[in-house]
Amino acid sequence: MGIGEEAHNVKVVGSGEKTIVLGHGFGTDQSVWKQLVPYLVDEYRVVLYDNMGAGPTNPDYFDFDRYSSLEGYAYDLISILEELQINRCMYLGHSLSAMTGVVASIFRPDLFSKLILVSASPRFINTDDYYGGFESEDIEQLCQAMESNYKAWVSGFAPLAVGGDMNSVAVQEFSRTLFNMRPDIALSVFRTVFTFDLRHYLSRVTVPCHIIQSSMDVAMPVTVSEYLHRNLGGKSIVEIISTEGHLPHLSAPEATIPILGTGDRSIVLAHGFGTDQSVWKHLVPHLVEDYKVVLFDNMGAGTTNPDYFDFERYSTLEGYAYDVIAILEELQIPCCIYVGHSVSAMIGAIASVARPDLFTKLVTVSGSPRYLNDVDYYGGFEQEDLDQLFEAMRSNYKAWCSGFAPLAIGGDMDSVAVQEFSRTLFNMRPDMALSVLQIIFQSDLRHMLPHVTVPCHIIQSMKDLAVPVVVSEYLHQNLGGESIVEVMSTDGHLPQLSSPDVVIPVLLRHIRFDISVDK
Image (cartoon, rainbow, N blue to C red):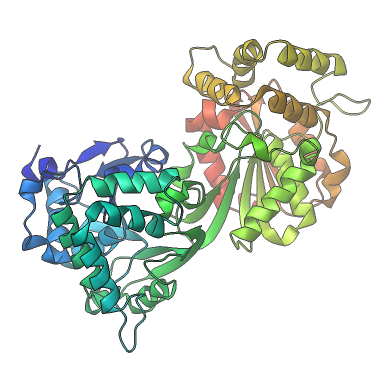
């Protein structure tokens, strides 16, 4: 390990061909990225490090003169990249590190393919023609409070910066990392951050920049992100997310991390029964370069708050469809590509009937309008089969999960995919799991299909216990708009989890190309 690597506690995880470097802001350390890293490690080489002066670093290495400007941090970043022999990377920087990345990219633009800037500001102090959010007197008062009683200052500053009270997990976490800093070092770094002026650098930044900003941030007004956008020398785009606080990746990961990537086009990934948004972990890294990727959990999934589950609202799939529409409206997404697995395939179809303007295309994976056989329809199940299934769930949910998971996946309990599906099934509250599965298996949406006018790409496994191959052809024949079918040589109802090497290229092709091109 090189000197820079050791001094900055450099950690490298993942083994992808592309490299992404995560830089934290003032008062935190590399642990602030703990919610994001799991989404990246499958496809990226992820580099984490601590800025000098952060709590986990050795205070003896902190040079007050070197770190009296951001150039010192920028040279550290370049040294880390050189020691790791990283020739080119995506750099994701928060606050202080966002601007550190900006400076480093001017010195060594060859090292960076893009900068993703979260809560970034080139100057925090107001001038006659610039609104940074603070007057000089405000900064001086904050510094005096730090010097007078650092512990008391942290207790007041943390909830202001995060946007919450001292009882929130995010505020407690930020307080912890602030307390870990040596007070005199914290004061020096804080003063450097809040008194620098990097506006003169912006026109020299030629690396593409993706600017991400909370809609409410006590440390910086929203107008700062637009100022960056107008004055950066290279291409840039701005994304204002509906979050509060200066550390949205810590305080609102469910809002910040799901919107991965900052492309011009939006893609929404919706999971099926018994899983959660993590089921898309193999696909997401392939999309973030070109798309704004939105992930969410259906109500009732193990990761959601059970107190929000309304048994009446979710007694039909329409309740879930209205949730999808509400998410798109809240995120101000005017139009998206929607990828839905299993029940979410049909949820997307319903939502597209209600609001076709919100969808450019639907990509359905293992979708079915009806699971029960009928006189002129083969759905795969008789009512007796479903009654036995529901009774087994009521009787012993854990045992039912252990039997259902390998059947649905198409493997044994030792396979990674079966273990992963078992985990997310176990995370569901049994009464909710039963209610959701009953709604899914008893639904009949065949009457709705002619009203679906949005183009549909229908993707299906060759062998699927839950959905016979003939169902995909039924959808193709009865949908009201253009549609295309692709049957993959995969086994199981969750091919994106069990056979990502086969499924991802298929999904990417249908996401990127329209039906007219595919034909």
